Length: 430
Image 1 (cartoon, rainbow, N blue to C red):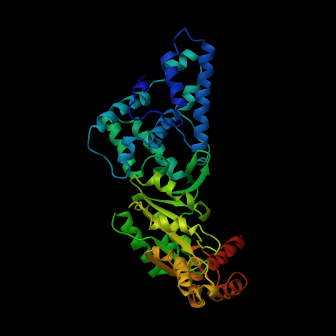
Image 2 (tube, one colour; image 1 turned 90 degrees about the horizontal axis):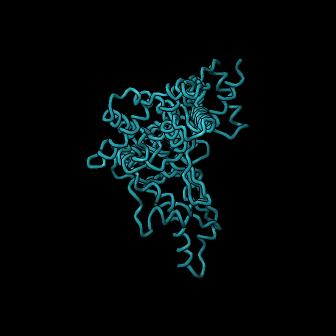
Image 3 (cartoon, rainbow, N blue to C red; image 1 turned 60 degrees about the vertical axis):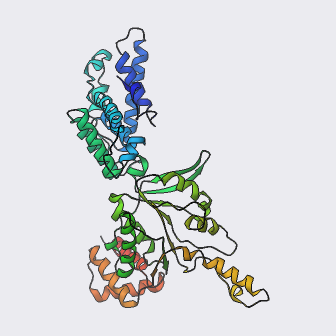
């Protein structure tokens, strides 16, 4: 096998199984090596493929699933050029075709002779593996299904050219690596530095799930759509009362525009000093990134907002065009103000400077969207709609009466309270 001739797909993470299997393909009949050692290595490779199948939810031909996983995960000059935008021009295509010809040889390898030599059925096991119910811990079902589907498609490719076309189409539709395969991410500070880590389980909320707030949702959608389509767009601040759907709206636009290349990175205010490192890792990719800050607010003694101000606007380096910041807050001005800030004192100029310093952060959000607490009639409308969606069978008068009692004892009028009430009723049904 010619894996040592790979040009673009080199030094792949989790590539040890590939190296070990290729060694077996080349040496399993070589009398120089102890047969028991080779059999032990084969058992280790099969073990690794099964472990990968359980953790990632793979099934069918595990060898081909593994190769497909490597292709879908490897961020190199070709894959990152093709993500979201599709096929590219230039000599890099020659190098890519060369590598895909090698991968096709690996896909088409017939294990029957090796299996006969080792007198084992382990290779038949990995070529027709029946998966455990579920999609594994690393990938959600959507990602697992896409990789397994690509694996089957590549196994049927008649030549390296078609193989290349199908992989490139995958890069265009879904992207490559962790940024392509996942929707949302969080930030971790490790010994190696700042790391962007996928969030594998996120709420599959959609904008239609949020009853009301049509004007607010439209402003958010219009800004996000402009951003995704490469037009000018603004950073967004969603502010207002608790439980009114601010965070749900942002999660919903992620689900709505993910297939158009939108990704989201959640970051907390104690991580703002890592913002520049995060931006450095994503600024040259073909995706559109929303850096998401939930429940953003600062006390007087907290200075993390200064990092945020510099990143949004004011630093020497221009914020990349593929990055926006979306934040939610219960405070309109984000930073806690006191009457002391507004009192006339001897140093009036300095007092004004203090106020302006605190107001300057919110001014850096070009779009501000208000989510207010619903009136009683709006609350009742939300309850009725949620009850209908959840198939709650209860007379309308009784439902609204119970909802009124519930909101009095559970946080007042809000969409969150309405949802909690409906969840309670759904849980009580037999």
